[in-house]
Image (cartoon, helix red, strand yellow):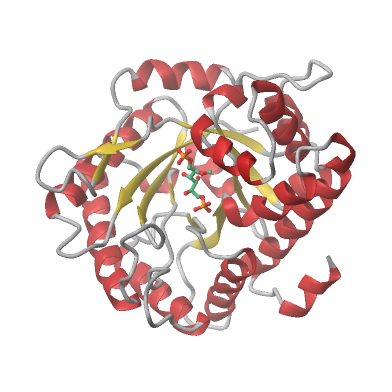
Length: 349
Ligand code: 5MM
């Protein structure tokens, strides 16, 4: 495979393909396993991820890359093959989460606002991850909308950290996925869609300003934003068409044409809703007489894995069922990335 950042970035957003976010830290995967009454151990986490990565049809046809956690990039399957080699054999690019998590942002809003950490020693960690096979990385900044929040301090600090991370990645020959997430879930998420629009626009402007200052090559990165959507606790939820239109409007106003692709996070949307929103957006773009500059695809965690996780249920005898559920979701999202998904196809599962 080519080692050029621009080529890797384009491969990640190849037509009909998107990214599987399987980078849950040990605390997060434990929460997911608790829901299926499965104990989270090094082996059970390996078995679950091996099941996903051996879903050959899905990995070959719909998944361009997988974001891994530090433990997973070092793990071997039961037969001794590294998990990285399994996904590479299917033609999928290994990626790695390199942030060390969102921590309270010191100051008066520390109970709500966070700053993502992980810059110390990052140059050395990236060099090691490159040797282990990673060709792209991910760093997630978290922005919370609440009464009077976010603060400019929070938006600025997180944008700056994202840009420093992205520059270090490119120096190491790794494509940075830049993920500024405006939360749609959690205890404060009662904002409406227009407030999400305002904060998303503000944050993206700030992020691209910092990326420019850090001299990040926009052709060699991928943006992973939230969709413009009301908070889960909002009294009024916007229609799918409104989410699609406002998300596209916001991205067109803020994301430079040099960026090759935008791969959304699902953020707590149901599987089908996340697929539907992506498909409507791609259908709008495809039907436009003026060409849009970037590809639009998925980089879903929960919305790609939830069905597979529950079909598997931690039981070896359910591996085939888990793989079927995963392949179905991956295919639905692949169609959405082409703008051709239809709700009727969900029944075919
Ligand atoms: C897979 O979940 C990632 C979060 O892991 P930690 O919270 O344990 O660090 C997360 O960053 C994920 O990659 C993105 O938010 C996209 O996932 P969703 O579920 O929002 O599509």
